[in-house]
Amino acid sequence: MSTIQRIALVLTIIGAINWGLIGFFQFDLVAAIFGGQDSALARVIYGLVGIAGLINLGLLFKPNEGLEREAQAKPTR
Image (cartoon, rainbow, N blue to C red; front, side, top):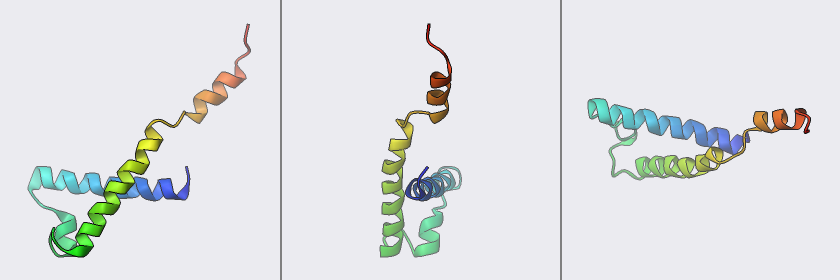
């Protein structure tokens, strides 16, 4: 996993936690920290989380390296 993918994964987890807080407690942590949903900094964070989610779509369709190694190790008949 590359550094960009790891950063994207962390941002996606942050976004998921924020959505969980909104869903369960009606509390938007990003808005609370960065000055409301309409502040420029909060909008940048929301945008970065959205881009991170798109980057992580690539991980969903990436072949599993463990399965590839296992397939190569098995002899064919």
